[in-house]
Length: 73
Image (cartoon, one colour):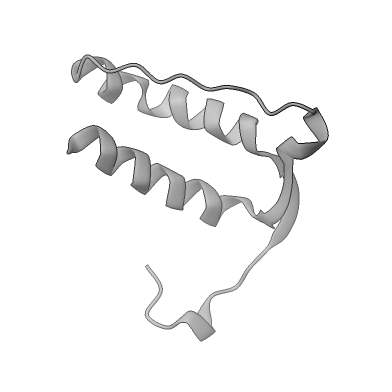
């Protein structure tokens, strides 16, 4: 969405990767179901490895696009 990498504002926050994946799975569940596919999410162990610090919205958008493309193609 950005026209220039220098114009991107990054809002750092700590969050759970597993939580983001579960949110994505819920949002994409209808599409996944129509394609007769299955998504399997394995939580991180130990739990401390599950936390990252980056821009949650951008991280979510990137994963959403990647998973959507995988579902469609």
